[in-house]
Amino acid sequence: MEFNKEFDASGLSCPLPIVRTKKALVDMSSGQVLKVIATDPGSVCDMAAFAEQTGNTLLEQGSENSKFVFFLKKA
View (cartoon, rainbow, N blue to C red):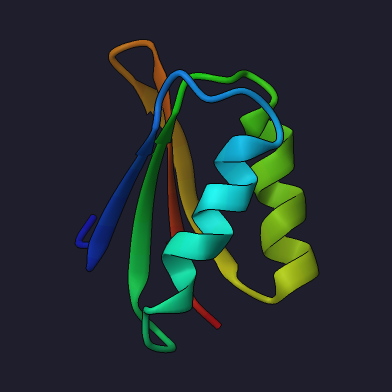
């Protein structure tokens, strides 16, 4: 999937992946896509809840190389 910006939250524990994802989205334009990489298993539920609460769209989530990968489209 194409994305405009990538943020690696590997090694960060809850709630830091979400807090830093929120900061990464600030300087992005509406419609742009952010790729987030995380290692915290809690980020799977957290990222979906974050997207729903903020109006951003969770386009895709999966895993690669034992890490969780999320693609968020900024509202």
